[in-house]
Amino acid sequence: MRIERREWAVFWFTMAYVAGFTIWFFSRGNYEFIWYVLTMMGMIALAALGLRKAEFPAALLWALSLWGLAHMAGGGVPVGGSVLYNWMIWHVGGEGELAILKYDQAVHAYGFGVTAWMLWHLMVRHYPATAGSWTALTYPAFGAMGLGALNEIIEFVAVLSIPDTNVGGYLNTGLDLVFNAIGATVAVLTIALVRTVR
Image (cartoon, rainbow, N blue to C red; front, side, top):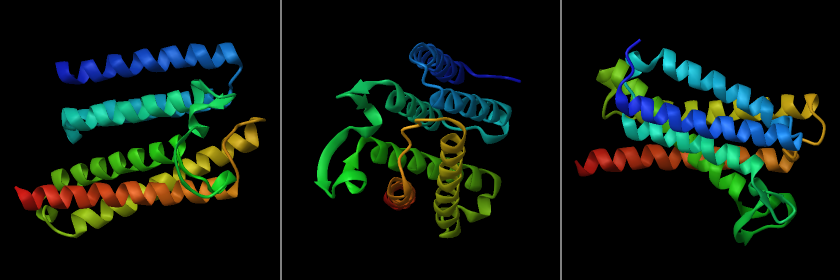
């Protein structure tokens, strides 16, 4: 398989932080995030296998890699007696699990916004007749929300399998899904706006 220089740069950057955080998680006995490392390795393998068929732009590959870094940092960087995921970026409103805006929520919005962008790219590449249509925008948005729900299932499996996961409860899951939807919607609206301006 042919891998271009720009793709190798993203690959080695990603592998460097995955290796670093894996060592960090093992040293702290944080086995929940080892599950996430394995999931991420699977995603990297999937992306690599489809690289030539997908022809992802470099900006999208970097956006996906930065999402992975934000995710790893969220569970691995200690902040105020907890982890970065629980850090309140800016208190918009709510209390406890309903408090907004946490780092975790921002990462969900960013990550599934990037996912919607990726799905849009795949749709217009493989089905060019859809380019410029609402279909090319709505399907990626709903697809990203569906993948966000799959992410919550993975977190649920982690909760059942590993004690003290720090994943959060029902309200956290609901907010995660809301922020997934916000990120996906903002992404496709941005794509529509950029295409209109061009």
